[in-house]
Structure formats: structure tokens, C-alpha cells
Image (cartoon, rainbow, N blue to C red; front, side, top):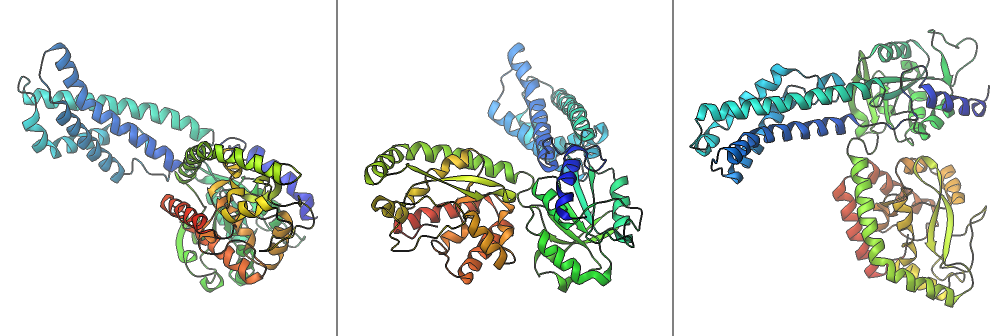
Length: 494
């Protein structure tokens, strides 16, 4: 049985039913962290409104004078204390959607603690026309009623979404032995929103086939293909201690996927690179060594996409007049189209068409794509200016708005260059865990332009992987600022 014969059926099965689980991977998945934060935001709004609403009624119908600024400050302070208490008590935990159960006693307890805490601030500010006890009773009852209503609605909606598998974490296991059996048993019985995505193993001979009663969904190549197609969120390598070196080799291949990767903790830690790999976690009764975390989880992908779209629209609007002039200059300077489209690999190695202003007299996009050099005769007169100023990259703002690229990320290379460097550099494919960018960490650190040697490409890859591992919004903004500086200095384009 060949890996190629397994890949497509395995992916189709995972996409349709997640190997028998309730989840449907064709549906969009939502982050539990995002869901928890949204519930917390509504909780805080309910508490703050509960403080303000009685004062609004008295002001409107009773003619009571209210200091609105101070009242809103009290409401905000009360809401912060309530949410702090609920978070400490586990009501915003992402470990299980049961954390969003209504639990009226805890809601009331948090409100009482909050009102006692703000008493010294709120008491002098209570309207004099209202008895203090009545003022507290009204605010407390209004806040509790609204908070209870929010929790009922949140519990109803999130329970339905959880039942539909929208929050499920899809976990695949590599290895079909006794250790894998323990992991699979826990995943199958878990109530923490985990969807079992199947067992994979390369050793499928008769002596090893389903030794623990496990149905093997495919080989390592099938697991990689499923990970690239978004069918899996976490992978657990569950091999016996005697196979520690093999586990390390498998981990190296799986690191290219945008998933969380774990190894059972009996694997010797010196088999895995130092650093983040030495974090320890657990999956039920099974101890795990965390090799890598899934890039851009929780709010991160939403935040990065929002910034890409907002800044992309702004930059495109600002650059539109210049882009029109560049298009005219290209047509006047040489024959050929204004835009050059080249196939490159994006997230999960999906092929995308990257757009640039044509800066050369050739349109190479096949088996031979020669990198541009400093005095390359193929570069047109206007193209030389465009490449020196990086203005030839401006059309990629359209790729950003289409969601194929990001403003910041690993720079994409021509397909033939991907194939060449991927065969030479072990970690090269790991760059595809994130969308490619118009600019990147490697470019602003000096690794722009031609990469004629393996050492130069290795340095670019190392900077790209450091960016993926340490992404933050401030990191992106710093790279964008450094990019503008590089453009002003006239550094070579990436």
C-alpha cells in the first residue's frame, strides 16, 4: 500500500467525519479563547449596565440628579472586579465549555464581593434622594438579572456550538502501539471538546497491523497531507522508548505543519532541539513533551488578519496614484504586460499567484527561474528603479486583501526555488506554517535580494522561523517600520 494511494481518501474521511467523531472539519472552527473573552466582555457590559440602569430610570422618571461620569466609573470598576472573580473561579476556562455554565451562586457571589469592594468609592456618590440601601439593592438586582440573562444566552449558544463540534480540538496520533492505545482511549472518552482525528503509522506490515485494536488511518505522508489541509490541530507522537530516535526524525518532518506537536514524555529530551521543546504538558493521564505550539492561535489570527486588511486598504488607497503612474511607465518603457504573475507557495504549501509590477523583460514561471542579480541584463530601465525602491511589490497588497498573503511574513519563493532549497535545507518547509508576506523579519535583518548560497538561504530560513515562533502585533509593526526605512535607504528588494 503506497502513501499516495492513501492520502486523498484519508483527507476526504477526515474532512467529512473526523474519523467517526461528531466534528465536521468542513465547518469553520472557533477558538475557545476568543469565545471566553467575548463572554467576559458581555458579562462586564451586563454588570456595568446594571449599575447605570437604575440611575437612568430614577433620572428620567424621578427627576433625581445623577453624576453620570462618576456613575459610569463605578459601573466599570464593579464590572472589572466581577470578571476578575469569575476568571479566578474558572468561569472563563478554555479547558471545557462547561466553564460557561450559568452557576447563579458564583455570579451572585462575585457581584456581592464587587459591591463591597467599591463601597468606599460608591457610597459618597449615591444620589442623596435615594436611600443608600435601596440604591445598592437596585444596582445589585439589576446587575445580577442582566448577568444571569447573559449567562443563560451564552450557555445556550455555546452548548449548541460545542455539540456541533465548532470548538473541538482535532488530535491525531502517530504510532499504533500500547502508548497510542492509552492516548486514543482518553481522546475517545474526553469531555473537553477533543475530536479524535485518527491513528497514523508507517509500519503497516501484518505483524504490526492494529496490534492494539486500533484502526490505522494512514502513513506519515497522509498525516502531513491532512495537516496541510487543515484537518488537524494537534499531533501526538506516541512511540515506545526504544523508538526515540525515530520519534525525533518524525518530529522534524511534522514541524513544518501549522499544528501543535507533542511527544510522550518518556522520549529522551536530547532527541529534540532545546528551547520550547522542553515545555511539558499532559493529555489526560499521558505526559507530553511540547515540541512546538500551533502558530497564531486564539485571537492572534483574527488580529493579524484585521491589521492586514485595515493597513492593506489604507496603503492601497495611498499608493493608488503612484501605482497608476508606474503602470504607465512600464508600458512606455518596454513591451509586455504591466503585472507579472508568478506561482508561489503560501500557507500549508498551497499554490497562489503572487502579483508584482513587471520589472524584467522575461516572464519566468516554469522549471527554470533564474534569480535576478545586481547587474542582470533582463531588468528593464524602469524595473531597475522599481526593484531598488521595492515599488514592484505594491500589487501584492491585492494578494493581502484577498487573504492569500500578509503584510508581514516569510517571503514566498518561486516553485522551482522551493523545490531546490527544500531538498537541501531540512527546515525550509517549516516556513509555510504562516501566510507569506510582502516583507519579513529576514528582509529587514539584511537577508534581502539574491540568495545564491545555502548559507544565505539558511540564514533567511532561521529568521523566518524565529518570526513564526515569536509572532506578536508589535513584532509586525516593528518590521513594517524597518521596511520603510530599508526602502528609503534603497536596500535591495527581497
